[in-house]
Length: 184
Image (cartoon, rainbow, N blue to C red; front, side, top):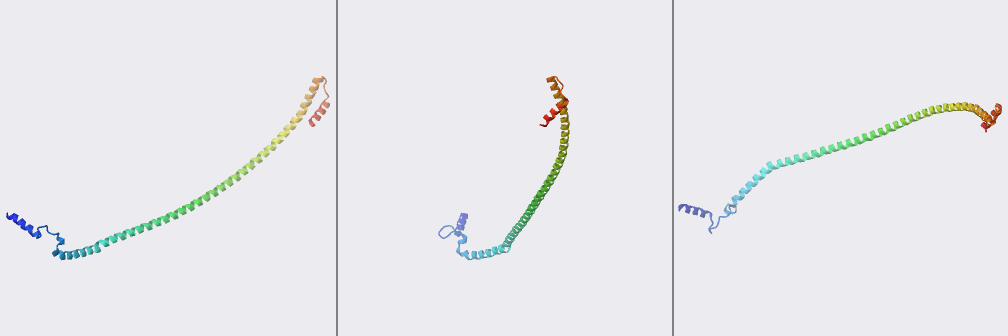
């Protein structure tokens, strides 16, 4: 029983006069002043720790990040400028190469056209010489053939007249008739 009594007496020390539960310790009025002192001490200590240790580290980290970002942006801008200048140089070289290629093409075309024209003239001259020779040969062959035609025509006309009339015609009369026929 004594133990039960001890428990009940222990409970009575923490209970209120009306028999309810004890109040929440931070709300007890007799400990309120000491709680405010400890709150102020804790706040000052926490403020000092944060302001002296944590905030400089965070500020340093933020400054380093900002510096890294600024450096990266500067490097990116530098690379972009270099890329733009390299692109402009490439385009200039490409335009120069195109102009050179067109000039070489035009020069080659002109050279080949001149060479082709020279070969054409040489070929035309050779053909003109061959044509003149051929015309001479044809004229000679024609003259030879015409002189033979005259003899053949004389012989043929004499043979035809002999065949038709049975009389051998006079060679001078046949030659005169052939001359008249060939002229007119």
